[in-house]
Image (spheres, rainbow, N blue to C red):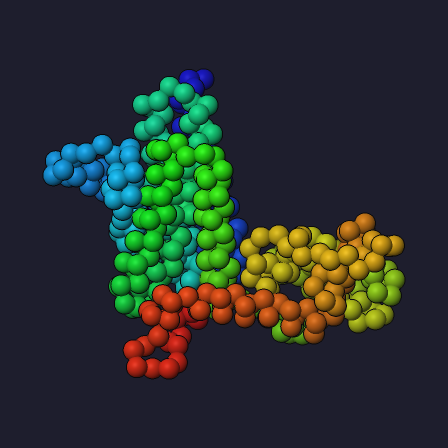
Length: 367
């Protein structure tokens, strides 16, 4: 198979997998896959055409080489981020009925950014000969970076469309995305040391984690663990996991949601889960996108028990955990509260999310 054709095929496969990955973050009310895919195609073409028109206009008005610091910061970053934002506005008719929680803005701008990057990959495949370099840089680094640049514009877009928030927040988000994009290209064009690139990429990753965790925390579809368990109508009796508290292996009532299966101990009233399910609980009910494995603290050497925050224990050896509902629910809600408080403490949140003259927040986060 022709190496360039292979690269295009890989880009398509990467795009489908990328959309599936994005959709996995939308854990409360998933967006239709076909709409995400269609918006990715539509938004990708619209954003590419828009950026090419801007580049052509720039070249006529003020011809200048782009692959330098000035071009990165003042032309490439703003042009390409504006093109993606414009494409999202243009494609709103596709997703209008689906935009019902803040994370949807991130999901859909990410689809546009993914489409933009994959089409851009095709143009690189035509122009460049070093396909190994393209596969490494374009698919594995630049494409995720395009998504991370634009995340904040997705949040601003959601609030602008759903809450009619001041357009200045959209402008601020655009400027921030343009800055991130410009700095990324500046690092690339000037061949900065890899350590500089790595630090910047980590910042990008932490940036999108910050936004994803917040939008999950304020989702109107997020459930409270205690309310979920106590309000579960018909738990099913299943073969029991071993309760690490009392040792019971009897059949237990099971409560399921998504990938999570929780069992209530028949003997000591603790809840029992697999280690994998424990992490899903923190993700689903605590709105934490990534693994919490680094949160362990050793509380006993034999047997190998570990505390997962206070009051909840697990055995890495048996891959099981148990918890008290009141304790774990309090911790999860505390995590949610800290996530929301951290986000709302930012100056731009206070500036754009308060009604002028009011002391109270508008209910932007629960629409």
